[in-house]
Length: 198
Image (cartoon, rainbow, N blue to C red; front, side):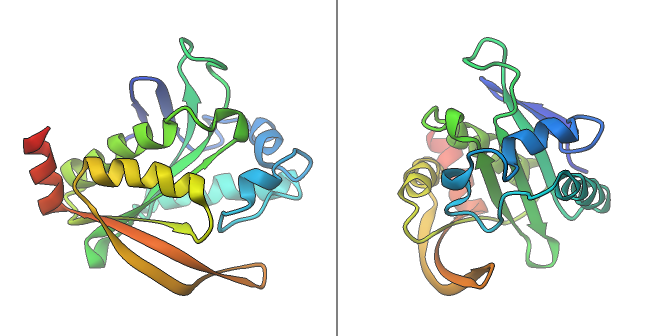
């Protein structure tokens, strides 16, 4: 159902699995022993405290992929890019089949911020959601205060003619803390219209 591998102009995406990414390499990027405070500041997850947490995350990603519940990918810049071949982060799309929409997610390690990778990934995944998965809506959100995510999201939401839906109060709980989130969506109609305009 989901593609095993994908690529955009500057990035490659491989299914997040034990076959495609070394658990130790992934733990080095997102483990608590690494300086990840800024990376996880506005995320709905926390740094892994042990390699076993990273291993379990990979197994869950494999199960979701096989069951059609979601697709996560390890993202790497192409060899022509700065730090080519290194793990830049994890991206994913998560369908809600009964409600005919999918959400997008991304975690990028700090050295890869500011390169437009979030927008490049979103453009590819939005096309997959509408053209391959035949869903009706793309939804994306960010935690209130995350100005970096806000700017990145607004770029591709505007490109595809989407809209800001509003503030979702007390929407997300992470380790006992509750956060407000901002939500944006792109409908199939908006996507098709933007395709014609592009």
